[in-house]
Length: 47
Length: 246
Image (cartoon, rainbow over all chains, first blue to last red; front, side, top):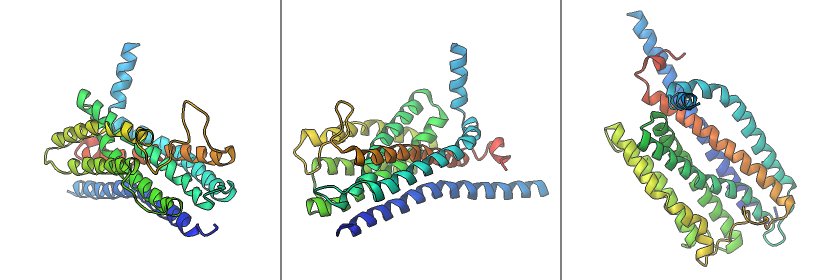
């Protein structure tokens, strides 16, 4: 990259990490909620 | 006709309908986003020619420009959702507004960060307090302000109203950011791509940029939908339809 590699790759690496986090964070929130929802329902059904 | 519009409006405003409908949009949107970003990334990093003066450091443009565009466009999305929430009290609009804030903040952060990294080899400095960069920093604080306000009240309605008002007041910053490079003498260059004239960029460099911009628009839509779904679950957790979700 002609001496500019560090700049280019660090910009891309940080961006990709942030973008992946943006997708994963809401997905994890949803799946955690649905798992808890499932547990609540099972407890409710057992009564 | 009017009946149809009203029905459609009501359906779209229903979190339950949105949650169900968006489940079928997500796979397509994911494929489209992944495809566009992969093609744009490989094209921009591997095949676009070097810049005559900046060498390879210009390749940061393929992240910096799309991310900055979405950071600004995303603010309008948030502010318009806030306006709809204030005027018509539509629940889904409130959720979209809250969902857009962290996404916009992350994109603004990336715009500032990639700009700083690009600034070092190009301008010789990571940071200057010039008009474009400072107004972008204000944008970041506006997004952070909305996030903070959304957690600051025990009453959800008050929180949403406060967020919407801050969001709407903050829109004054957006034209300032757009125009900052023309109004003031800044280190930042003026816009390369304009609606009113031909882009001042070689097609070989421009084409991958257009692909990346389209990819980032899809990415924005994807994450906005994901965030909104998470917000719907959180807010509607006491309703029977959420309790029955598999």
